Length: 195
Image (cartoon, rainbow, N blue to C red; front, side):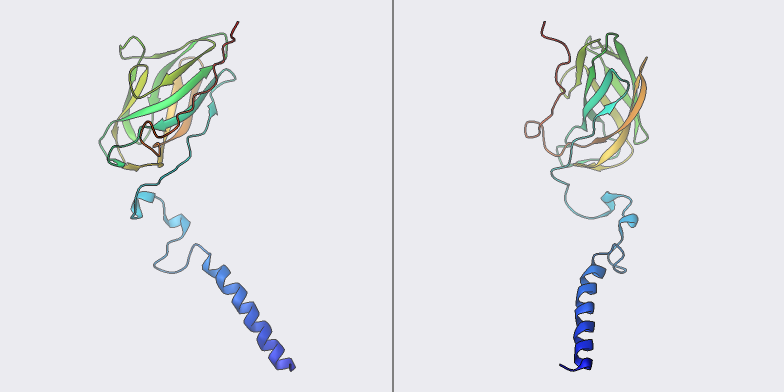
């Protein structure tokens, strides 16, 4: 092999290894938008997202933690602007003092109806050393009213939980990825002792 042939072979090898890497970039031309240009996944045509992750756990204080946050699954696959949607969550209080969930708010919905165990609108009690489950059927529950955006399965919106004593925390609330009965709503372990 001559020196010139070796150079051409090296140049061909170099070109062959760099072209696939260039194709992996986010800005691959006019028809393939980069990640930064996809601000709203709803702008991308396609079916709903299946198999999304549940929302993260978040400690409000040392004693109060919110887990398993999610929005109810839409019957037709999409929550449309103006609709109301149930909020799921589990609130664990491992402390010796009770608290109250007094408000749920966010920019992507007009308001929230808090329905306590006694059925009257208002605040939701979070007793000491106990769990409270916000579920779709029956109190206690939270209904987010008048969505200002469309949401598909696994997409999320920020939701702020406000407690009378513990303060507030904002979490991402994803639309659950499967209809009820097919998903797995995992509640935290009961913090109360068995004694």
